[in-house]
Image (cartoon, rainbow, N blue to C red; front, side, top):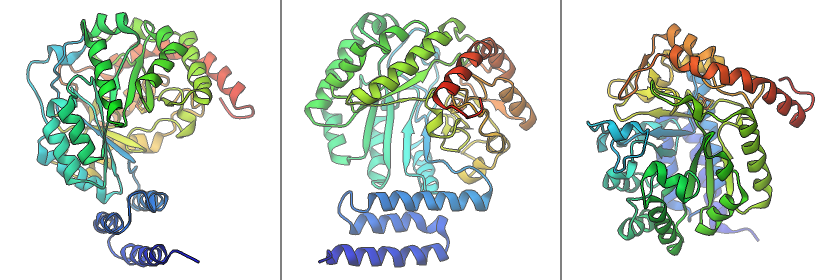
Length: 411
Ligand code: SF4
């Protein structure tokens, strides 16, 4: 015998979907999702909801001939409570903020495009923890994640996470105690471990974000590091390749080809043997068809409101204070991404800045996009002069690795 409530909901859902699709999908998706959420117990129809959102995004993408993102990254603030060596936030005196109204408006517009995942970057997003929680309350149908140094998470914040249920922190870690504290300050490693223990004691989900560089790659690719993250209770670990972005960025922190291969092998090995979900944003392009920026999967809005294709690409034609999200997706630099992706058939060389440095300066210059760096504007040509030698060194190694792992595919 079927489940009568489920059957009724299924019929109801199908009727509503048809009705709303005939109408104005942009206006009606949030309403439809509200109906789903109101009338179905938690986790019911989750795959269906996801499939529906994807269908809407495809529909809008085709109709508007532009990318429509799955996630929006945004900086609620440029401010930070810490002073890490080499970080621009340490020297940047003035604070820039997206107001509560700005954040709300971005989420409302995003939902109309079928976007239900919002990821805070910064600055330190939890400098704005009250507004961050407020937005979670205002949009219970969305998921909010924050890249955070973790030091502002306390018992009261955990209680709020338990209450709102749609906020997940991704805490920055850069290896073991000595390496971590030499850059971030004495005692920070211990403090972050206390925070992870607190989150674990409440059974709250959290992950780790790690930037790998020529200096820490041995530590963060080690089995000991992965085991430690699992012991601490992390559900996921996201790895980011160091990017030499900014006029003063250190080029010698770029991993060598051998170091990048080491990271590639470690993550693929531990993915099958360790109980933690790992992603390496520079080496996992094959799962997402290469570069995901420019709204193809995500975009970034900085604390000034500039809409940038990627969290590492500080160039833009538009600002959210005087442009709609949809128009931003159709702005010249975003369309240049849309028309040029993928930047390489070899998914181990996905980036128009790091591995294909001939692309970014041309796209920026052709579209008249301006630099949006908070502190010291850098030309795309200057940035890509730093990555060109890296790209040259990585190409033969990446092509051999790609052919070895994908026999018969172009490199
Ligand atoms: S622009 Fe580069 S760093 Fe940004 S998503 Fe694309 S490949 Fe990744």
